[in-house]
Amino acid sequence: MWTMELYKSGLSILHTIIIISFALTSVLSTTRLLVCKQRCYNSRFVLLLLCCPRQHIMADEDFECGHSGASSTFPQQCSALRKNGFVMIKGRPCKIMEMSTSKTGKHGHAKVHLTGLDIFTQKKYEDICPSTHNMDVPHVTRKDYQVIDVADGFLSLMDDGGATREDLKLPEGDIGKEIEKKFDNGDNFMVTVLKALDEENVVATKAQN
Image (cartoon, rainbow, N blue to C red):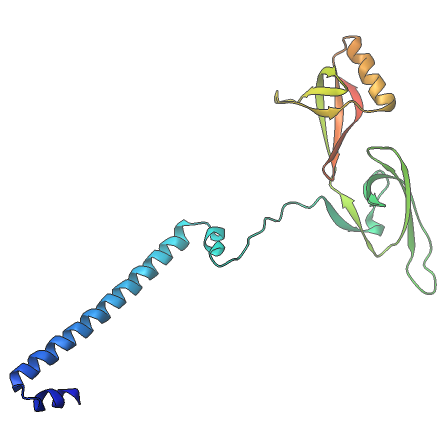
């Protein structure tokens, strides 16, 4: 109705048409600008999705992407465990030395009695678990190193690729004494290192091939 008001105000029809045309042109220009900006924003967002890692985009929305690293243990049914295998007993990684299974009673499952030795301390542990239940089994890795030096209670070791490390302590007990004796005698020998649950230790010596 504002067009009629313009006309009644004394403006000629031509002037009124010119004003209306100018107003419509301004509205259309503004609309086109908004559409252009929206298209530009959408294009930039698509480009961002294609080029940037997902976690960088999600970070702007306060999302946090976690890295699920490999677990140090995995579940295994108790009845599937075997002698000389590994299992967690009392929170310690153990090698199974003995295991026996009791007969199934009237009320309940057969139970497995496990006896194991801590792979690092050789301490004896025992546990009893229903045969159908799961127990945690540690991921245990074994690697051989050549001994190149023994100093200040630490070992200097080298792997097959030539990489060296000096962060392992000389083990206590008979193994440590054996290493010192072999090194003092000038023997060329290797040691076996076990790793489980972010813990490492030398567990044996062996002749170098």
